[in-house]
Image (cartoon, rainbow, N blue to C red; front, side):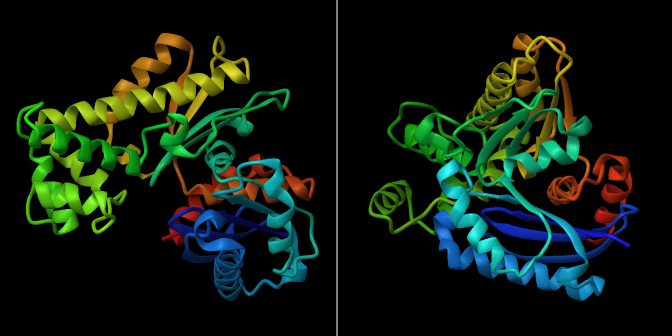
Length: 323
């Protein structure tokens, strides 16, 4: 029996999955986020080891039994990052072929037909990756507002801060987001909030996006505008990458992965409107299963095994053990 390893390293969590050649998921392990930009390569190694050990313990599978391994890693953004990441992965003691991609590719491999199309990730931040049938790849930078890429949790949270400021300086009407930000930071009032954020006494975190979504559902105008804006920005990420891989006129699959899409139509509709305006034959798909499935399929590819032949089994059994 052959076994395959996939590890999905995010900025907030890491999942490892071991799967046999029938597609049955036999081992799962997890750890904290491992983006080297935040935790360094030692931190990356720690989460790889912890999640891998958890998956091995559950499965009873040893290193020598793994035929191929795939790693989708947050922070693996440029070719110059490759050698340092591979050196870190080598410390796991695997003897099989391995491959590494940016974690934004995991959703594409897991959700699109044979990994062809575009994946838009919206979690703590955002990312977008694509690939056409000829292997041509497309991407965004993946480093958020610095490059004008928006739509994830932290971007929504900071947009909420701007809305609170606008209300405070009387540029716009009052918003319930003021209460949301005060409670999230512990600030006494708007003046304290603005001073505290300016002086790094208070910090804005991606989880604020959940409350912004809730406020939008409850009719707050500022929150509704923010979620509409975020959806449109995510749509533009998809359109941009579809153009790069020359699929804007095709029936391109646009996979939506990440926790922000749990908001549903309130964010999906504005995204869909932008996508269909520029890619009229596009098909939007919500990722049905954990992104680590994509890393497993990548690992299978390294061993010359067709992971798509067993993907349905991988997804079904992964849902049962990935928590």
